Length: 118
Image (tube, rainbow, N blue to C red; front, top):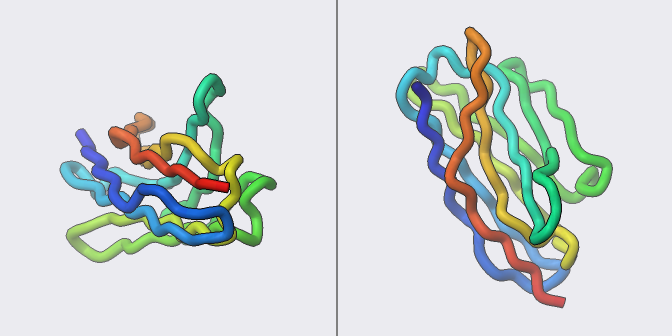
């Protein structure tokens, strides 16, 4: 079992920045890729960015150049961070951290709200 706890959401003006963090606990040695997804009101959950255990990143086209994903693979912790800059009203949503493990299972955090005012 892996538990994920997100932090860092909130309200920001358009053009501003926010930093989301997600800390994994439990069987963290089984964690491989980690990432962030978001769900806007009335829409399906969508990928924002992912990062493999080796540091290879992948971004949704809508956030390329504005968001940066990174992770800390220290011995006793796994943390993934999403630095969001130049935020737009369309970035609004609940942001969910996820972690994939070996054997494969996908875990989700509880979500953190990001609101961008225009």
